[in-house]
Structures are given as C-alpha cells and as structure tokens.
Image (cartoon, rainbow, N blue to C red; front, side):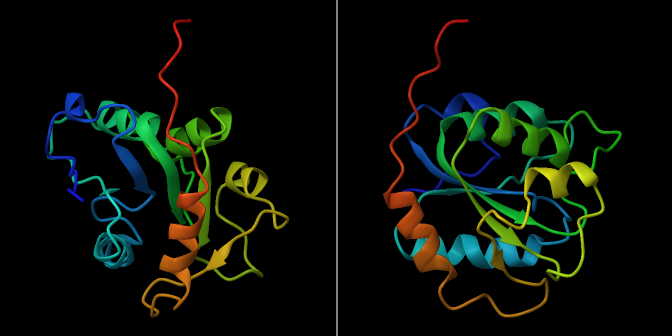
Length: 166
C-alpha cells in the first residue's frame, strides 16, 4: 500500500483512504523516535500510516484535522504532556478533544508509568484507567505485540463515513 505523508497538501487526504494516524508525536515531540519506529513497523505490515511532518508555515491544524477526519483509527502516543494546550494554533489538546468529541476510534499507548498522571487533568479525565491502554515508555523497546494489536483493532474498524452537512 502507498504511504501518505503530510508534506502534501491537506486536499491530498480523501475520505476512506487513510486507515491510521499516529497522534501526539509529530515534530520534536516527546515520542517522535517511537512514532517513526511504529510507523515503519506498521508500514512493513502493509498499513497506510499518517505521521505529521508539516513544514514551518504550513497549516498544521488543517493537515491534522483532514487526516483525523479521514482515518479509521487514531493511534495516540500519549506522553506525559499529551493534551497540553500550547500557544500554537493547533496542539495535542485540540487533537485529543477532536478524537474524543467525534467518537473517533483510537488505540491508546500510555507513555508514562501507571502510577503517574498526565500533566494535564483533561487528559487524565479523557483517558481514565478503565480504558484499555498499552504501556510503552519513551526510549524503551517497542512492545512485541503492539503492531499486532493495532492491526487487529484497525481490522475491526469500518471506513469513515462521508461528512454530513451541518
């Protein structure tokens, strides 16, 4: 399968053509190295994966929103600061709120110890311990079953329905 990378314009993303998006890990994010490794492993299994690599000056919000809207599954690499609202026009707080409010299917990778909370209370509230979470700390090897679990969850997801006029 082909790979879509965010250096293309957001119009490149069309409905039903983007199975997976990796969230919370673009640029110099806390889990960028892990995101690249997971992307490569998923692509090796034939998955089409979006990982933001937006150039400075590009419309990050439009690129991420288009990818989130068209994906079948968001894989959230939730590091300690995931969900933080920054001064930028788009941040992981907006990303998280979109995923949760739109009931977007997601696979949560918890990238901090279970005895610690995310720095943002809204993230802790959005992802309580009762939600299935895969544990993977930054700078540690990828869990051996992570790719299989993501692929299995993706297989259960239906393509996104076209957006309805509101």
